Length: 322
Image (cartoon, rainbow, N blue to C red; front, side, top):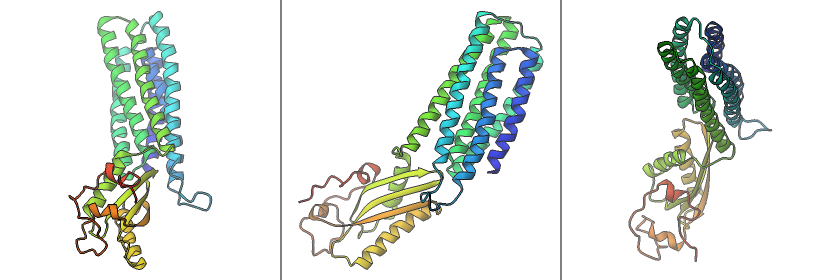
């Protein structure tokens, strides 16, 4: 929560600095950068509320927690960025058609460069904290701040060229390029938000879980299939089907399921909920079973198989039941 509050405070200060720079220079490119700073302030405010809500524990009305508010936050921020890009295009085209003089350009460049350095450290810090805490909101806000850094850097370089060449039309052209870059960033955030809200498959997360299962597998765990996982804020929901010998006592089968559950919860440092379905083995599973002393075996065991994402996520691991 502290990181997002710092982000909000810095965003407010830098917004004021950039609008002051625009007042000095009357540059469309600087105005485009300042308009994005308004979005930074609004997005940081919304992100602060989202991080607080996502940290609240599950309750009767929200048994799976409040983590998905972070996807709303990322989508909201992306939509704001898109609207800002439209405004930037309008100003940029106007200055491109009717170039205007840029007074106090040297001072404006120095101020803008200093603001960019502050934003760079802020953005890198937000992304680092967001990855450590698995917070989509912090990562989205950090990337937005870094986008602001790239924008400011482009504006500085472009205005230096304007200063050297005297080509005032480049100010409007630069604003349009900034608008295009911001538009693409907004669309990416909206797409990411949509994927999270729709519980889209996360290959990176599934690969991570598959490696954990493969690294701790036991011979009594004959196979695993129908692995599913999704994130809700910094919380991970996992469910899977664990194939066990069909002559295993219920108490023992339950103990094996609990071992899998605890192993995954510990891996995610307690920020995970795991549901293990226990399935009795059938004859086709003999091909992958490594329990050689088995009175139920109907066929020889084949070559060992690797528990990777492609294998663990299929519904029946390719086996047809008799």
